[in-house]
Image (tube, rainbow, N blue to C red; front, side, top):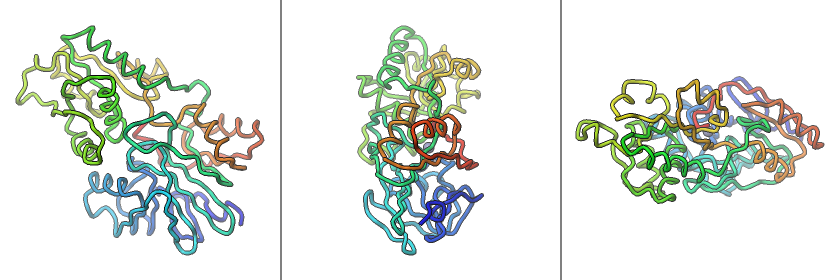
Length: 336
Ligand SMILES: [Zn+2]
């Protein structure tokens, strides 16, 4: 069958007519398959939701138990039939529970990767390339200028600054799902054994990661009720990026603003946000990872979703792979 008849964009999201389901719909639908828990992909209000157990748990933490009419947990690698269409979830390496979704029917296989990365990340299962006819890729960092350095180098720069400025609190902006826990885990791997102070918005998700066996070490709420300002000298405080724009941040002594994001490659972006110590740590594939992954899937056709589609489409065409942008709207990733 033609790939476009198996999966195509609708205003609600990617739709599979024979299976009558959507992948990561941005509006409430009857049946949704969800790649991961970031809020632009995982929304509340669908009739039935199929996702990994971790993604379902994360949605429950964020939206409450009644976030969908019914839920079903997909095991990685397990084939599930939906109205005769075969669906399989494979790890995407993006955040805990993140999965690519392979949709196969009448001899055609399409893989919707959701968001993904190839850099090692101890907080989630690594990306597995899946052979397919059509590979649907994101392109958040789909320009050759985006090359993410090793995350251990970025964490080493943070720890060096902590040693250099022992009177200061280092405030690290990191998205609440995935990035924050990855930064915590990286700090532990680098030998930082002090308690890490966290904004309240990270508490539930970080506790969930710990409950799934990801050791983040001792986390303490970053509140002044029990602490004086001086107690935060030399501390590392992690919070969602939005928290650092408000009064919350001013309570800390001589704060140094840090931000963990792939966008920190762009110096102008760091400056605009008032970031003094940009940390280039991304949960998305960089240019080399995108192009390597496309080759590894062996796909004869690539569809490019949110991000900088044009450069990647052009690269595919120059490499002899048919490609087109899908122009899906509504995905402004909260986890870049
Ligand atoms: Zn995401």
